[in-house]
Image 1 (spheres, rainbow, N blue to C red):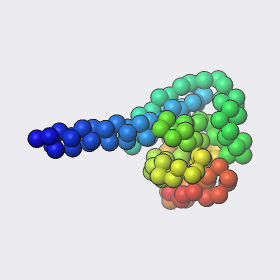
Image 2 (image 1 turned 90 degrees about the horizontal axis):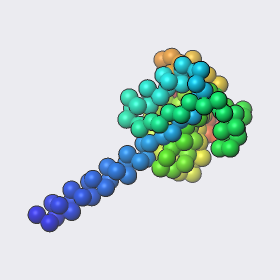
Image 3 (image 1 turned 30 degrees about the vertical axis):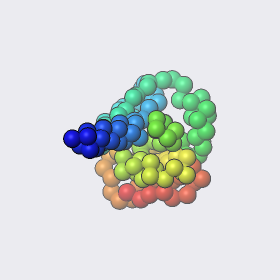
Length: 138
């Protein structure tokens, strides 16, 4: 019985850590509808999203160190790792980011039409890391 209780406690603790890894705070312009579409995409993929609408997007990006050439309309901060998600990055790419702690962040620069919240993935969306190197193609 003690072994079963210990295993159950470990499973609960593991679930809590996993939930923290999938928690993200998203800063978005209050006038941008596509940002809400991306937030829905992330929630549908199992992320716990805290969306903050703000008119301070430029200063937030600067404070977080988002490279301006990779900027998009919203910025996410993964709560468990501090890693950054810039723009309409697919949820599966965010999972790939979480698996690689050496990568500070990923971006889908601009507002690509073949990205979650903008349109359908078509296999041609290229996300890049914050050094501008290709990270994923979806």
